[in-house]
Image 1 (cartoon, helix red, strand yellow):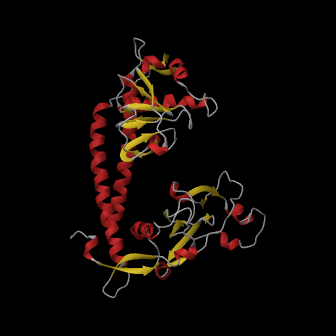
Image 2 (cartoon, rainbow, N blue to C red):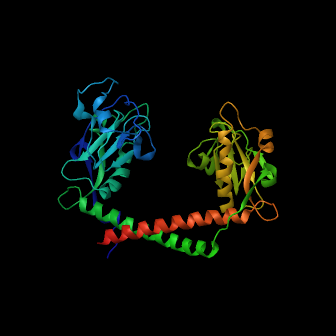
Image 3 (cartoon, one colour):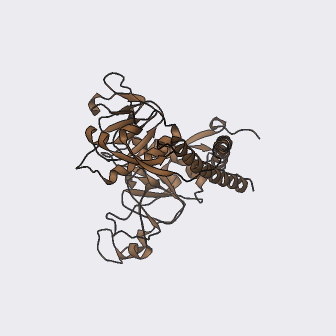
Length: 373
């Protein structure tokens, strides 16, 4: 079969209002949180597919948009799935495919295709094109529905000049198959690699060790204010609890501290957040790099979960300074000689990864089978 290319078709410009039914969001204020809610609440975030909470149907029906108990506009509080949810405020221009019913704030604009059901394949094709249309908007210039109705986007067209929906769907299905095969190839190699290493794990004894017995190098990063940072490709690790500690990417080489193959421990901010950093990075003064001469990647991952428990002891008001770190103790598996059992730590994590690899492969195999059915 001939591989589809984006250059194989002509493209045309369309007004969003001609392609989509553009609706207004509803909630200005979240209702009281539900513990067991199933209806997603979408807000102006760039994370978690736009979902900021889950609610029960009864709760959404009970509370109106200003936080009062009212049944007014009750039907306006729910939005059907098979649409795109566009953030028009906050993280402006983030777009997520929603397959099921949801509720949302007025910072979200739900849009639906006018003449057909939005499939997930069409959604994946349209999202980057819509993001391109909205890239001129920002927090100070919101992409509200009124402005969105005047926006335009480029789409592949057929011989009559209409949107070529079939091409869009076929193109995404083709690319998904390619990506699925890459995932299968990677994890099948990983499966063979791990299965040869993990032959079984026996119970081990645990022992308390000094931090300095485990980590031979303990060094804090160096202060680098935002104004001094230059654009680049080097990860800048700070005290965030997200994205493996990556706060951005910089190009600074002078007056910074670089590390690789270490753990980073947030000593302020999200105190206690711990991540394994395999590749070279620049460390801010809000993190401490922990280097162990005996740990491989897998042992480091084991250690990260244990070190992270320091967040139970410290907080924003009681930071982990250099002196406190070196005085800390840590519980770890010990070998028969009473030394840290790095081999056990490594094999334990490999075993966990092996189990996950098998799960992923099973899912991808099913996905490819269903897709080819």
